[in-house]
Length: 366
Image (tube, rainbow, N blue to C red; front, side):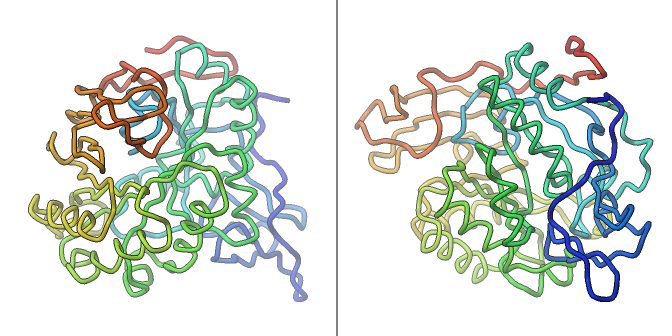
């Protein structure tokens, strides 16, 4: 395969009676004339078919702590090779990666890397997993899928950091080779999704139920709390109760603090008290593992045994301290198993963030 491939055929589309081609990767169902692009910008109509125009091209690579995704119950303490592309299939007014997700410039795609190169680099750098992140991997599905295949052949796992906005038809294909996912549940009202993200809530809920009930993908949820938008106690109560009823009590939830960005520069930062309230509501409703993010709070970012209350995994930002789990992820104090994917010993990557230069052939981390 050439190291300069940027457009490849896709599967999830069909031709309409009026001659347009409809993309069926996400619920926007973009209907395209020849030469047109979907809202995500990277899926386009060429020669009467929908192609992905950014295959093999990335906005950059970095080795992160897995806790930054955030995933607290998936290979804690280990390094993950992270990358994204450009574009997005949502239009969030608060997007905190808008320089990538809203990009319409292909020259932002600085790194050229084929799936085998990514997998080989992750292995050489000691990464236990590769994460599709920074922008939503749903829109670069074919690239992510091939990377996941190459990683699996080398014993490396893959992580999707996603808003979960995809169709019933595409969902099984997208998650088939993914090992873990953090789904961004942006709010719990259709109004918020319509007005603030220009999308819909129900497909995201469908994705969450699919992952929890029909796959072995390890699932965690992030809820970015925005003052005046999705921070109502009633909404948080309804959302966390829904999670326990439909997904189960073991799905961790991360309540993250908002900071002003993109088109919501006049909205204030999330008060710490709001994050603490959200976590308290979640625990009251039966969520066993609720965390706060984008703030420094060792107590609310650590993991506790739901049976005896001992601190099983201590966290200071993205760095581990306490480790009171035995083999198989059991509490060292009472023997209760903690839900998640744990190795016998935690990783020691810490909070480092190391950019990595990739090209047609692997190079060392810088």
